[in-house]
Length: 99
Image (cartoon, rainbow, N blue to C red; front, side, top):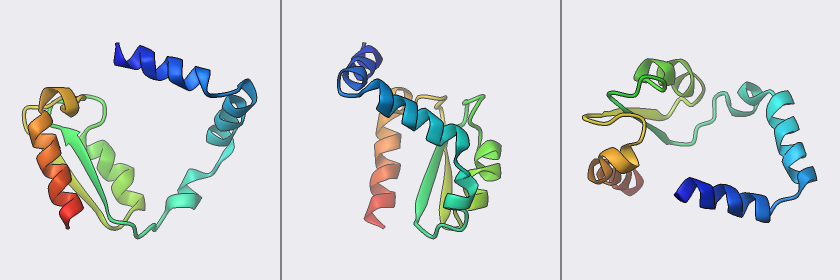
């Protein structure tokens, strides 16, 4: 499975100390301070059937901190649009990247 290979690769190419530093940074960093108001254009894509990362969740997180964020809800998709609606996902990504 691809996830197993990803984890295996990550463990093989990392050290216990590096992983510890990464976890410490994520648990102690004030990410809101780091990102709030960041002008970089971003696109947030959610599946219309994703029960966890909904459009409302993204409005309360990403869109609160990144003023140039475009939100798109992919029809007929859940949490894994890369597997559920790959053509629609690629089309929206290509359109965003093309400007």
